[in-house]
View 1 (cartoon, rainbow, N blue to C red):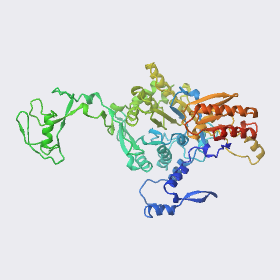
View 2 (tube, helix red, strand yellow; view 1 turned 90 degrees about the vertical axis):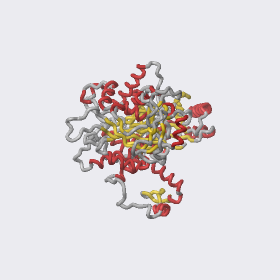
View 3 (tube, rainbow, N blue to C red; view 1 turned 30 degrees about the horizontal axis):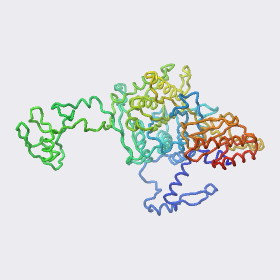
Length: 636
C-alpha cells in the first residue's frame, strides 16, 4: 500500500513544469537530458540541441528583443509554475443545494486557487471573465511576498496572528506598474491552461493598465488570438467635475485560446431591427428590406444602363459608384421578383433582403452602450436588490451590471451544453447572478466557478459580514432565492458549493531539532488535527483531478463510512481506526460495492494510514483489494 505524503505528486497540485517537459519530450526526445539540479538527479532541456532544432538565429536570450519586460517578470513566470501546498476545505453550511449543485464559490487567494484547480479543470473552461484591480492607486491589495503563499494569504486576511497589513499600490510607488504586472501575469498564465481549445477570456480594464494588459496577453495567449477590444459605456451622464475629460468608458479585452476554433455566437435580433423589414408588395416570401446594388469600390461589373418597369432609363448607378452584380444577374433577380423598383416602378433598383434569409441573429460590435448592456449605477441597484448593506459607506461604487455579463455569456457560451464559466476576481458575484438569469431565460445548463479574496470590509459587521467574499455569497444566495420566488416551477440550478482556501490536510515533515523524538511521535498521523473526513476527501478530489461537484455516495461497512466518488473512480475509507478483525469484512464490502458500481476507469482506493491496527492489517487490506482488481491502493 503506497503512502501519500506531502511531497508525493498525488498530494500536490498540478506540476506544470513537469507537464511542459513531458510535452517537449513527446515532440523532441533529444531535447531532454539528465542533469544534476540543486545537487539532485533530474531532467533538463539541452539548450544547444534546442538551437540546433530551430536554428541558432531563431533561439535568442538577447536583451534587445521585442516584448514587455519589467523587474520581477522571471519570478512571476516561475510563480505560475510552482505547485500549491494548499487545499480547499468544504463549507456546506455556507452553501446552497450542496448535494445537487454544479456551481462553486471559493474564498481565497486566486493565484493559489487557480493552481489547485489545474488537475480537475485544465482544458475544460469555455469562458473566463475577470475584472482585476484597475491599479488606480487605492484598490490594489495583492501581495508581492511569495515565500510561503498559503501562510502569506492567511496573514493578509487576518486568519493567523502577527501578519502583515494589506496596503494599496499608490501612484507614488516606484513599482506602480511593476507590482500590477507581477500580480496579473501568473494568474493569466494559469487561466490560459484552464481554457478549452475553443475557449475565450474577457478582461475588463481601464486606461491605467490597458497598454500593459494587451502586451502581457499577447505574450501569453499569442497576438494571433486577439479577438477584440470592446468599449463599454459605463456611465449614462458625464462627470462635470472631471479635471480634463469625463471618463465614460471601460475596455473589455477579448482573447481566444485558439482564434481558429473559437467563434462568437450571434446576438438575438432586436424588435427595432425586425421593424426595419416590411412587405409593401405582399411578397409570399415574407418581410424584406431593400439593399443597395451599388458600391464605391469597382467590382468589375461596370456602370451599365437599366430600364425601369415604368419605362424610365437609368444610365447607371449614382455618380462615383458601380453596380455590384452583372447585367445578366440583375435580369435574373428581376425575373424572380427580387428587385425593388419603388412603388411607382421608376426608382434605382434595390435588391430584396428577406428576413427569413438573414442569419438567426446579429454580429456583435465593439461599442457597447449603456442602453444595451447597462451601466454602473444599474449594477449598484442590482447589488442592493440582493444584499442589504448596513450603511452606505460599504456600498461598491462600480459593480458590473447583469446585462453586461449576460451579453458576454450570450456571445461566449451555449445554452445547449454545460459550458463552464470561471471568474476569479468575483467581486460581488455579478457573473454567477447573471448566469442564473441567463440559464432561466434560455433553459441553459451553464456552470460557474467564482473565486474571491476575503478582503476586509470595515463597516459591514452589522450585517454579519467581515469580507467581500461574504458579500459574494450573500448576493448569489439572494439571486437564487429571487428566481425561485418569481417562478415556483423553476427547476434550474441556482445553488453553489462553498469552499475556503487553507493549508493542506497532509502534515509536512517539519522536525524540531531540539526534540526529534517528540517530532517523530507527532508525525505518526500524517493528517492535521481538527480536519474532518470531508476536508480530506475533497483534497483527494483536487489532487486526483476530479470535479469538485462530482457525485459522492456513502455506505457503511462494519461501522466504517466508505465514500464512492464519481461512480467508483475513487473509493475512500477515512475512519480513524480499522482493527485487525475488521479488515476482511471491510475489504470484501468494498470489493462488492466496486463490482456493483462497475466504474468505467481505473479505481483508486485510499485509507487513513494511522487507522490500521498494525502493518499486518494494512498489508492484508491491500492484498485483498489488489486480488479483486483494485490495484491502486493508497494511504494518507
